[in-house]
Length: 219
Image 1 (cartoon, helix red, strand yellow):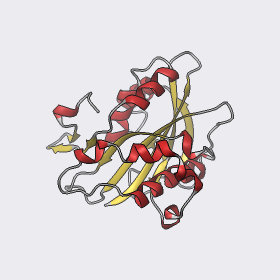
Image 2 (cartoon, rainbow, N blue to C red; image 1 turned 90 degrees about the vertical axis):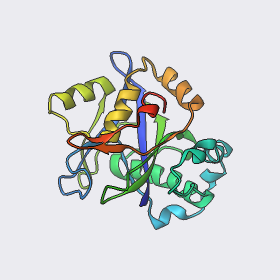
Image 3 (cartoon, helix red, strand yellow; image 1 turned 30 degrees about the vertical axis):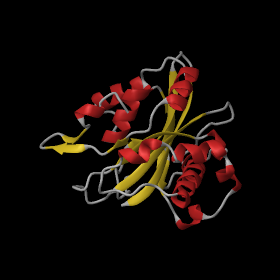
Image 4 (cartoon, rainbow, N blue to C red; image 1 turned 120 degrees about the horizontal axis):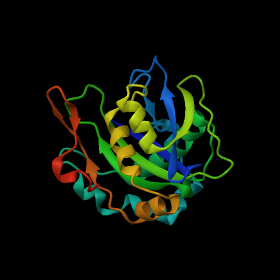
């Protein structure tokens, strides 16, 4: 199971509400080909190098939070070196996949998802959120990602229902969570105060992944 980071970069929507940066994965990708996702990827060896960014006390504190106690009994808690690597990977992947540079201190941990053991590819993924500035445009790298776009969560979900936008389950659930916010300030306040609960979806025949009922709307 590989450590991975994902960045949900948010900005005020032109017509109100919020917009999220999404990119389409390459059709040649081994995981979720052609799916629209938030920029991100797996942790590389380079991400374990010490950085000044990890001295940010808030980021370190978020990773020492109680979410580790919610881990399934079969999984290990994230240690400090891995936590640093996750933050570094989030910054690196956003730069590589969307040509956007943000300080590590702008990241806030939003959620923690683990692929269930039934899947051939397993990821231990930490979703971060950050507020975009006016200078953040977003340009896909045209290798791993294509078609970078800013889009309202509700619009992305509507396109998915119309079979015009391919989304995978964790992305769908995050978009459902984000569409409730009418303003970026409201979203960031929620992010800074919400608990981090580990999600390991179940699987149902003919349905794919399924959120544990006790966690629906509570993560």
